[in-house]
Amino acid sequence: MDFKKRNMSLKRLLFILPALLIYLVFMVYPMVRSLIISLHKWDGLSPEMNFIGIKNYIDFFKDPVSYTVLKNNLLLMIVLLIVPVILGLVLAVALNKKLPGRIVYRTIYYSPYVLPMVAVGLIWSWIYDPMFGALNSILKSVGLGQYVQGWLGQPSTAFPAILVTIIWRSVGMPMLLFLAGLQDISPQLYESAEIDGANKFQQFIYITIPQLKQSFAIVISLLIVGSLKQAFGIVYAMTWGGPGRSTQILSVWMYFNTFLYEKAGYGSAIAWIMTIIAMLIIIPYIRIMTKNT
Amino acid sequence: MNNDRLEKILLYIFLTALLILWIAPFFIVILTALRTQNDLLTNGVFSIPENIIFDNILNAWNKGNMSTYYRNSIVLTLLKVPTGVIIASLVAFPLAKWKFKFKEPLFILFLIGLAVPIHVTLLPNTITLSKLNLLNTLPGLFFPYIAFGLPMQILILRGFFSTIPNAFLEAAYIDGASEFIVYRRIMLPLAKPAIAALVIMDFLATWNEFTMALIFIHSEQWKTVPLGLMGLQGQFSSNYPTVMAATLVAIIPVILIYMLLQRFFVTGLGGGIKG
Image 1 (tube, rainbow over the protein chains, first blue to last red):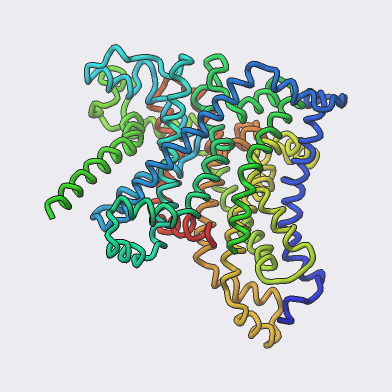
Image 2: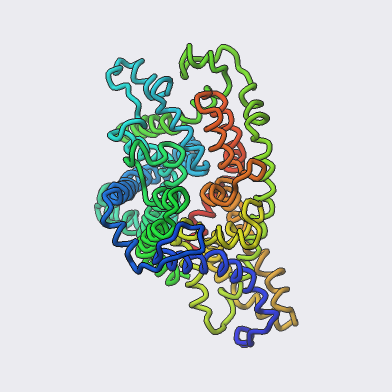
């Protein structure tokens, strides 16, 4: 195929340049610059930057707050990998049947996923409101008044309350991806399994799950990367990392240090720790993608 | 047969119970937004409103500045979404169909962006934007938004373009068509379903974006809807009906688009990602 081998002329370069330029200036360059900043002691404003090597990273792992932050991120990731994946899979299998009204169910389960994070955070802050919120109202009206409490105001319940919010938002995404995966499985596989005497449960374990391998890879990577990136708006709107530091997560903590505490070097180190975690997780995903296309 | 019916009933009970949990927050927003503060505090959130009123919505729209935030979000979305998708499709074409040096590394460079948390770019981009005099302006959001949309859009469009048979292109080249004509007359029309899905997904992402807006925009007059909503919560904090009215106003466009165009979500998310 001759047409593929022509040399790169200026005209052809025009296809690549707009994307490449914007991407280099606003994505690649800032990443590198952030790495450099993370090796300095800097307030983010003054011309004076002191090179301190990896001290910011060492300080991060020495700071007790970091363990609250890492623990919350880990908890968020684990909860997201369990609840939305299992619930999403169950819903996808159920809604893959020819049930009347299934489009209504699918539409509503997915709908929170299209909302702005800040809106999700505000809606649930109102639900958890200690005085007039819906949750406490329900508890009172069903005789569970002793459980009425300020859900977001105390360390013991604030992060679980955020987790519930994020689960509510997230379940639709795996459901929709699993549904798409299920529709690609050939019915013949089930037919021949039935002839061989496999029951529904065996079919699910030996056909459905393995056939959804690719959907699982996508769902898991999206949820893990999402747990790093997307909780920002929800935590920002609901608790601002509080009470104390109890609901602090990497992204919000990075924002606090960089933009509120004038510790730009330290904040950039936190940002790079997030980036490294995300990279480690996304590389297998990228390999699946490139193999596939 | 009987077993089947029981199974179906149990399934419906499970699905419906979950449905109620999932839809309840939306009802709470509406029930709060359309009544007076007084009515809410005396009768509780689950009571039927004494009067259905739209004052809170007008309050959020006018005093809460929602009208300004809407204008900014609409302008930004209308400019950013088409531009971003066109730029992504331009580069996805060579990545799918040409042979050139550094093609694989270029593709991988774009894919890496899928993993980059925006947070790592916030401070350096603040510095760049302030040097370009774009800090605290809508164009200051436009370029970073484009950069962050590119990885996923390039991945999906490249996948889609790859499935277009080479024979189509060869025939056009033999007729003397330029690369641009091939892109414009063959690739784009055939990729319509993918492009439609990307435009819709990108509309949502742009409308909903909060983190970059929070860092790059300071003045009231340039705030986008999520950023404005957050500020409005500070201003009206214990006036729940107004805060929920503003939330309702903020989410109506995404809900409408989602409801009307949801068939694209299935193809866009499911089919598109798999290319």
